[in-house]
Each structure stands twice: as structure tokens, then as C-alpha cells.
Length: 278
Image 1: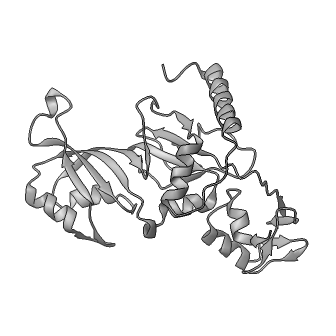
Image 2: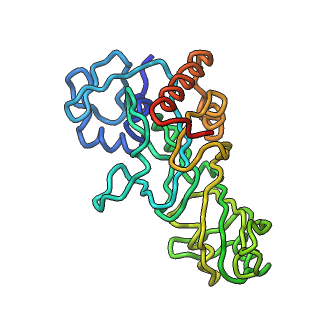
Image 3: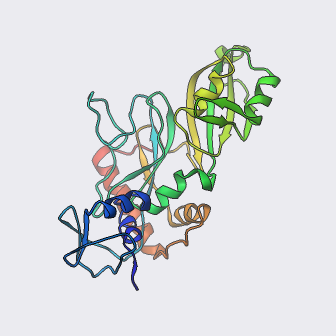
């Protein structure tokens, strides 16, 4: 059964549908020797070229999603002109497609990053219309009042529009040196991912963010077993929960084979690096 060309290309991780529509409009894609235009359809068996290079459409429909624990000091780009480490440096190679980072974290923010080779899934998880929640632990230097919290949940005008937290909850002190009103932990939830939004919201109230960690994205939470700079594959149930969160029909997994592949990849990594989860 034929599908729109941009959808077919998105499933192999070349980018989001919106990005691929631009490629098609620019004449970068051909099917069976003819330059494509928006609205064209194709089947996996067609000879599809992008920038003159063949693209193999694999129809096993088993997308991968990785959970990565980003440390401070890494940038969310595939390469960096200043030579800084990137979040892509430690990721495994794919047999097809490419890894797409689901959202970004700035260099001074740690925590959960998702990567997938499914372009449409990545696009929807990041799109504000789907209101996928992001949860953060944030340490604030400065006095935080109930009035400030009320403003942050009702809406604050930033340079790129009104922004707000869905919830702001004070957390118990994590160590003796944090038991003062000038250094407090909060758990906050956002339903969008604008650049430095968490930091800018707090800074609008005259306080400073001195630690920031993302702990969940949609239905996926970062477990303590995933140490900094390490990744694990999500299991089929977790992947399906992400598809459902953004109203995409979940793929049909051969769960036995997928779990076997995950186990084999983990064992191979442990043999190469030593056990990072112990």
C-alpha cells in the first residue's frame, strides 16, 4: 500500500515530515527516476533517492528509542565547532536511518534525553500542540514565595510570549547545606520545550537556577540505574506508550525478538565497557 513520500521517509529516521516536505519541494527527492513533488506517494519497493543517494525503506516497523542520561557539559548537536563533547558521541550505530534527539537540554542541564530513529514520533513528541509534559528537578538560589509560585503557574510574559509551569512543588532538602531558604529544590512540569524555558521562567522572578535536571518526558521516567553518559533501549511497552501519547498508531512488535535484541546489545556493550549499571 502506497504512502505519502514524506511519511515513508520519516519512518526511516531521515527527519520530521515537515522537514522532509521541504526537501521534496526543493527537488532533493526522486522516485523511480522522476523528481518528486509534494503529494506524491510511494511504496517501500520503489527506488527512492535523496540527494542522489538511494534510501532503503525497511518495512519491519520496529522503531528504536533510547533513553540517555545526559551529564552537564555535553551539547545537543551531532558535532561542535568548539570540540565540546556531544550527546551523540556515545550512541550506538544504526543499520538504517539516524538518531534524532527528542528536544534539547542546554550544556548546563543534565538528565533524560530520548533518541529515536522514527522521524514522525520525534516530531510529535516535540510539537507544542501535543502538550507532552516534561518534568524537572531544579535547585533555586534566592527566596521563593507563594506569590512567585502563583505567577509561575498562572503565566509569565517572556520575550517569546506567555509561558508557565503546570505545577511547581517544593521538595525536601537533599543535604545539610541546602536547608536554607536561599537554596531550595523544586519539581516543575512543563507542557512545551522552548529554549531555556525553565531557567527563564525562574529568572523572571529574580532568582537563580543553579542546578537543573530533567527526570521525565511524557510517560518515560529516568531510572537511577541509568548512570550519567549511559543509555538503554526502551522496551516495546515503553515505546508503544510514547506512540500513544502523541496519537500515532503503535507499531506491532515481535516482542520476543525485540527483547532478545535489546539483551544482546546490552551484553555486547557490557563486554566492551564493563558493567555500567552495577
